[in-house]
Each structure stands twice: as structure tokens, then as C-alpha cells.
Length: 437
Image (cartoon, rainbow, N blue to C red; front, side, top):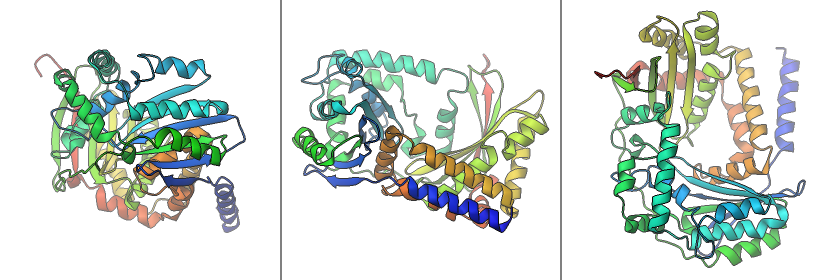
């Protein structure tokens, strides 16, 4: 690529990034609820969302899965919303809704026509202020969670993250699954569920996002009216144990009755997602397996026909990221052979600069992601909440592309060398479960 073309591309991307700058206003209510407003009057749509600073890692380790359970339970109803009515009111008013939970946070949102903004705020304030947590709701949602586990975890390769987590972590709660153990939920008392809500679901442990076709002054008044009365809770204090660095290769076997083809996994425990190195590792994972022209797919699947699938994953988390290399063999290819072929590509990254062409391709991919993530009010709301709560830098919604563009080919090489050595990982043979296993 000539210098003239490179300069033109660079100017184009910078101009595009500036044109898509997301304006927002943020402030705190007296009860500690952080509020972020984004006004976009181009379409008559508004999203109200709340992200709570609670996830699978939180709570007693003999009561795992509570955060995910509450993702469901807090749709049961409130003092002013009848049982099951929450999920009827929203579509009846032209809206959609959803919620999701990770190891680090829980996120609820509703998307409405903009003339229903007040309804969205009322619904979320009811969830925070006085939900109904009773035996009937707990029993109902317990069955819902069990069915979700059957559909999501008890399917081919559905235990992938469970296997990685329990072998990569020994003391940090990331070792436990986000959905939790069903016997923990079965054994929990109503008092334990209420105590969990009172600890983690206060306004001072959450961020409220309102984005879309709004008037800021009117919205701020409604936010105060509906959320101001919610009393703050004691500050959540976390003191999770730290993991010792991995200094020698750990080799383990894991079995799954729902698979027929084995897999090899090489998993690394790396710095949390807000660190610069984590962003570099994003680029490394995309270079290795971001599409059919990526290094691992092209080599192992397309050209050598040694693998059905080859992938590199950089899973972002607050305390530790998970970087995992995964491959499924084709035919009689051994798992060790697949891992050796993958390591060959890692070694190249550690000792040579990736080509200028591949580097530009990476930047193009991240520019596309950046534009896509900010292309809807729902995407913007999710990003604002995530960057505030998990990265402690809301303006990443505007500066993240610049951050990626500042990462050099030399930095990619050095970070690969720093973290991705065989003596720093867990190697997992993920095997079909036989009757005698």
C-alpha cells in the first residue's frame, strides 16, 4: 500500500470516527445512582436500561448462580406490577425487552416508542424499588433456569466455558459457572434471595442509561421522580483472592457426553479487560481467527484441512481475561498435532512483525466493529453502561477506535511474547464421555 493511499485511508477513518462521536450527559442522584443520557432525535425510539454491578462472581460460593437467577426473578413483578404482567405491559405498548448476565454484571433494558419513555422509567424503578420476591416466583424461575441450562449447557460444546473456568482458576470465583449449580439454587432459602437483592441491587451499585429521542430536561425530572425515592444500600465491598501466575504447562482432560468430536483447548489467564494489553490481545485473537481469511482458519481449515474449526477467543472480564485457543480435528489428526500447528503461528507472532497488509486489515475490522456498535440507540446504551461500570471510562465509546489504532505491530509482537507461551497456560483435551470415563 502506498503512503498516499495509507494517508487517505487514515484520514477517512478519523473523519468517520469524529462524525460518529456520541454525545452524552452523566450525573449522580443523591442516592448514588449514576445516570447517563444520550439524546438522538433522528428516530422516535428510546431505550431505558439499567446495569447492576453484580454478576456470577458475586455471592457465597455455595450459592452460585444467584445473579443469573435474579436476571429472571426480577421480571416476576413488583408491589405495583402483578405477577407476569411485566412481560405483558412492554409489548402491549409497542416495546421490546431483554436482560443478560455475565460474571461481572447484569443488564436489563426496554426499547419503546419515545412517547413511552415514562413507562420504561417506571418499570425499571419498580424493579429496583420493591420487587416481589416470594416462594412462588422463586419456584417458577428455578424451573426456567433449569430449562435454560439444559438448552445452553447440555448441548454439544456447551460446557466449553465451564471446563475452561474450572481449570484456569483455582481461587477466584471465575472458576464457577455463571449459571451456577442447580443444587445451590434448590437449597437456597427465601431469606437468602432477599439478602442478595438487598446487598447488590441498590441504586448506588447501578447505572441507568436513557438514550434516544428524549428531551434532557424532561428526562432528568422523570429520572428524579422515579428513582430518587430508592434508598441507597451499603457499599458493596469485594475482596476476591488473587490467582498465582501460571509458570508451567498444566495438562488436563475433560469429558462431555454431548460431543462426538474431541477438541484441544489452550487457555491463558490474562490481565483484565480495561488494561491496554487486553486491547492488544483483542487484535491478536482477531488476527488469528477473525474470519475465513484469518491465519488459523486459512491454515488449518482451508489449506491443510486438518481441522473442522480453529479459533482464538479473548473473553473480556473485569479481574482476569480468558484467552483461549480452540481446534476440532478433521479425520485422524491428533490433538497434539493441531496444538503444535497453532503454536507455530503464535511463535511467528512472537518473533516477527505481522505484515503491513494484515495490520491494515485488522484496523479495518476494528473500525467496522466500532461503527457497528454505535449504529443504534440500543448499542450505544449498552456501550455507555459497559464502559462506565466495567472500564471506568465512559468516553471509550468515542476513543476506543483511536486506542486500537495506536497499537503498533511491534506491540502486537511483544504482547504475544509476554503472555502466550506454553508454560503460561492450561492445555485441555476436551473429549467425548464414554461410559467408563
